[in-house]
Amino acid sequence: KEGIQIELGRIKNCLPLSAALFPSLNREERFIPKLPPRLHLQSLIHCHWSRVPNANIRCQQLKLSDTRGWSVFVEDA
Image (cartoon, rainbow, N blue to C red):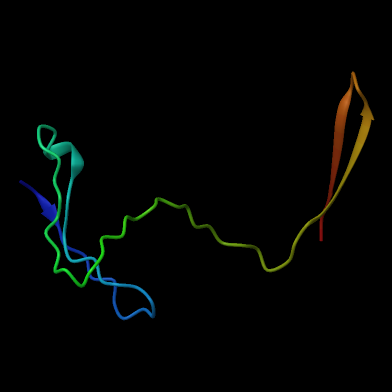
């Protein structure tokens, strides 16, 4: 079985993730990690991070009609 070990560092209110198994490598059995009784298993949720620009662009929206839809104007800063 292949595994991965990750150290998240010292972040407040965050437990380090000690080890995990890839789910595709263990299809027959469900892997339940053995943890000390004082720890609880926390699952990680996938999220996407991206940079936010320093200045927001100005945009204006206008509904033309029910048949023509919406029009959006973006102004350069």
